[in-house]
Image (cartoon, rainbow, N blue to C red; front, side):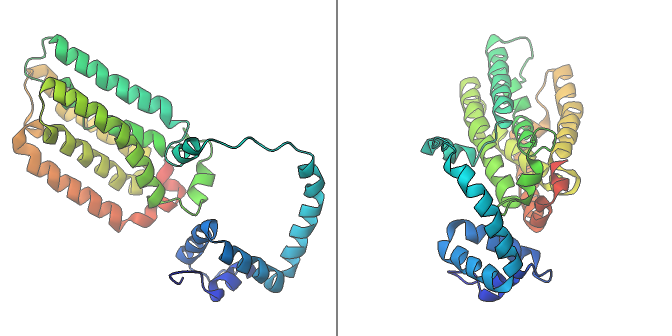
Amino acid sequence: MSVEHASMRIIDGYARGDTDLAADEVWALEAHLEACRVCRDRLSTAVTAQAPAVAALVGTVWADLEPQLAGTAPMPRRRHWSARLSRWLTPTMVPWLAMVVGVTLLALLLDLADTGSGEVSLVLLLAPVLPVLGVAASWSRGLDPAYELTASAPRAGLYLVLRRTASVLGVVVPALLVGGWVTGVMVAQWLLPCLAFTATTLALGGVVGVTRAAAWLAAVWAAVVVAPTLATSRTTFALQTGGLPAWGLILALGIGVVIARRGAYSVLGAHR
């Protein structure tokens, strides 16, 4: 691939359906074709020259479809903001994000009501696992009926995982920011664990699947931190300022693993 356009070697090989093209070249070409009319025209010419049988088949199919398409009313254009939003969120994510925000608000109300939990802040206690729920929903095979199409799209893989993760954090972090400000919790106390848990979920997700990793981490957090903290009514060391360096290290390790295994998110196993 060149800076401006795809090379003719890749375009000709793609048109012929060569199997010796590297997977990253194929995916890069398909992503480039989405935005480059020049290369689409070059590909059309290459198909005609390199694969005349395919060109003839496309012409036959188009000849049958054109009369039907001419008599079909066009779909109304989506609003610009709606089209942009659909690139970041899927319909299945909306109720999960609403649930996460609702849990945050409930935890805030319980903190303000002083339900007898002592010095424990429920907002602080739940902050690390709340975004994990949204991330799991955004990359789940069971919740996304189009998961196969999603995983095979040119812009799938780490690019799509990070975009959907950013959309989850864009909803959850402001809600936690408000909750932390109202209850007087330091931003770093909940933000670092929140980001560290999210990065760890993505890192493990490249091995066992994002949804499975989220479930395991949430279960471990509930058993190791939530239950003992509520039982003793004292904030655990993991959520005190002394534990912030450890969370920073976990965040850095999680980001490193995600970058090192970025190719793992391009396969269907990441949807488990």
